[in-house]
Length: 97
Image (cartoon, rainbow, N blue to C red; front, side, top):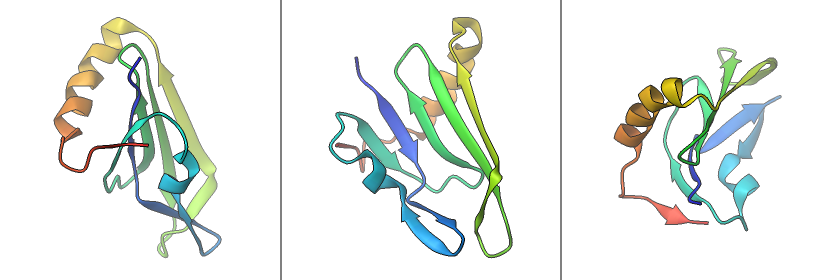
């Protein structure tokens, strides 16, 4: 199974920069970094998709109480999102972790 992740390069919590890419080191995933204004992470394995959204303040700090994860395993719904995911998935910058 191929697992693809689109992740924000970093996040900020309590003025501390967190490198999201570091959290997935050592795993067998395909990862692409992309600036995602509200989402911090999108994971897709071909059958399911997980989207993680957060809100942030004016300084860019994530409001941890605003985190929402949407997990979708319904093929009739996920097929619409797969097209959007694939449009954002550019082979340039693709790397296997």
